Image (tube, rainbow, N blue to C red):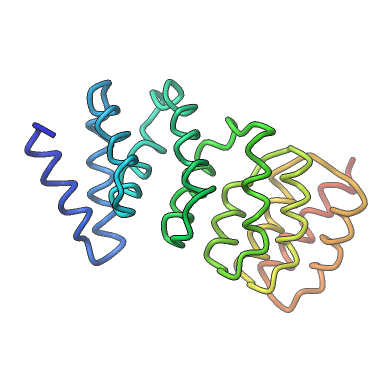
Length: 203
């Protein structure tokens, strides 16, 4: 890359020891998104280095209104990574990136996502939950029902929130898991479940 400011920020992001520092650099890099730099960031995603892949994805996945122009090739890259990598951080990066653009999910994508609902990593299951928030697709809903019964309270909370108030889809299976979560010992899960059931009782 010829721009010294961009090179400096990428190096800073690569070496950042704290998440707050990393995201500060990523935020600044997003201001440099133009046709030339989009191509450069895609080259980073093609890198053999997982950290460079993450930086490229994190920049492009929230690059303002322009990202609609390149979200399809971005998804192609992301789902290829998800099919081939076992790197937990990279998988989470990909799933969060999907969550910021999940209105572009297609039927073909859900088979890849389904394999992560049984991941041993609670961080991956949490990122999967984020990736599916607000998605009305039947397969997405089935995954959220499973995640709303997860052993991780954070995953369970977000999935309950997703089922309860982020979609209009309604059936007995959703109502059953929301009812069960109304009795959770966790206040936030209980609150989201009650709110979700209340919304459906008004229909």
